[in-house]
Image 1 (cartoon, one colour):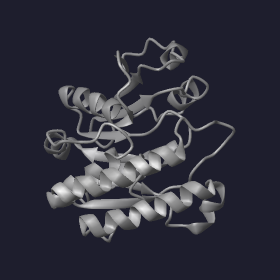
Image 2: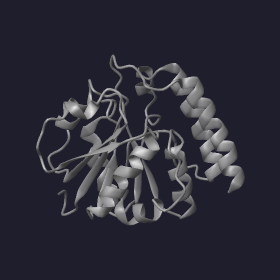
Image 3: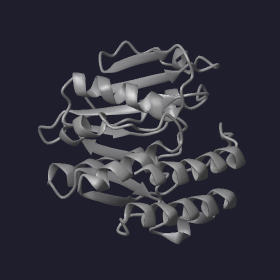
Length: 233
């Protein structure tokens, strides 16, 4: 527990066999539940986790549904376990786990109900981020700003988040996307519900890992989902 709050963390796992063991080992000891969601991973990434800790819960999806689908499965279990706050990170080691307290403290202090990473608060960090991702994230963040009418946040595609489970109970009932549009979808519904969202400065960590996504096809997919999703709303 952290400040008398039960903390759960959801980690979607797809082709992260080289990284996931290290990520789990670096998680703070105050985390109460660790939900590792294998999205029909072809590398059997969760085989790398040998720990028998009761904190660790492995979820195996029979069919690959996308990162959003994996996160939703983890969210549902976190709600079932009555955690107070649920953090979400990726299993590729690109997120600074030392920042987790900065994500959950504003929620505990009732300064926000949803916190999310923002890699654009300090442009010095961006030199570590691939140029195509910088351009894509700026474009989709600006698009998200105008479509949600929320201009206080940025970096809409950042998957480093934390949410109060009271708010999560409302959010999980919405028609959330199953893939990379998931984060933008969440922000839209939270903004519509007048939920306070707070950006947390994060620094991207890029090593020798290879991305599991095709930037062009993913980018086009997110673009068209933006158009059709907001046209219906």
